[in-house]
Each structure stands twice: as C-alpha cells, then as structure tokens.
Image (cartoon, rainbow, N blue to C red; front, top):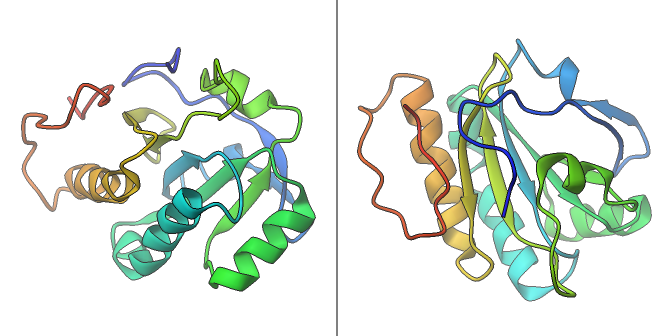
Length: 170
C-alpha cells in the first residue's frame, strides 16, 4: 500500500533513463502533469499490456498536458530493449535499488512488486493513486479521467473504482 495520499507533494527523485540519461522529476514540475507508473518487470505479459496501453493513448495523454514515466527495477539495458521492442514513446527509469519505490511506498511484501500509478499535477501534487496488480487497463483509464479533471475537460465525478482506488481529485 502506498504510504502517500492524494494531495501530498510528490517525492522528487533522480534516476537513469532507458537511454542512459539523467532524469529528475523536479524538472517536470511546473511544466507538465505526470503519470508515474510503477510496474513489476519488463517483458512480462501484464507489464507489456500496461505499457502498450499508455503508448496507444500517447496522443490523448499529450493533449492533456501530461507525460508518462515508467518505473521498475529492471536495468537501463532491459528498459532500452523493452522500449524499442514495443515502440514506447515515453521515458522508463531504472530503480534497481528500489529507492524510488520506497519513496512512494510501493514496495511489495511478496516476490512481485506492486503495480501502482500516481497522477501528479504541474505543481507536484499527487492528484490520484491507483493500485491494481491484475487490471492493467484500469491504470490508463483512470489516469486519463484524472488528467481530464485536472485540465478542466471533465467534471469531477465521484469515484466508482474498486477498493484498490486510493484517492481521487478533490
């Protein structure tokens, strides 16, 4: 379970991207909304499906003034191959020491790390947290709904998600 909550400030972090470059979340704050999704492992069926759903909705995400950052403990080399094979247009960052997972409170209690998505607004405030290990499609659907609310393109609706939903825009 994430230890963070909706309306908390998103923890800032630095990491290495799939291209071997430096990434800093602080550089995104003030510029764009961020969909930060934690996934268990490159090249697994569920993670491939989830990542490809973010890819397939890339234009919609951009139209909502957002970017996507994927985080797993895989190596930079694994991320590079995964991104190339599935033509992912967004950044993947390597968290081999699980430091980012710890910062966001999404460490697993078993062998499979949790699948959790945070929607962070331009001010660096967490606007939504969604956790579901098995419903990969819901991560993108939920993210788009929250981004539409942030951008004023949709009225705020009461949450209708499952018990795995950790919060919604207030």
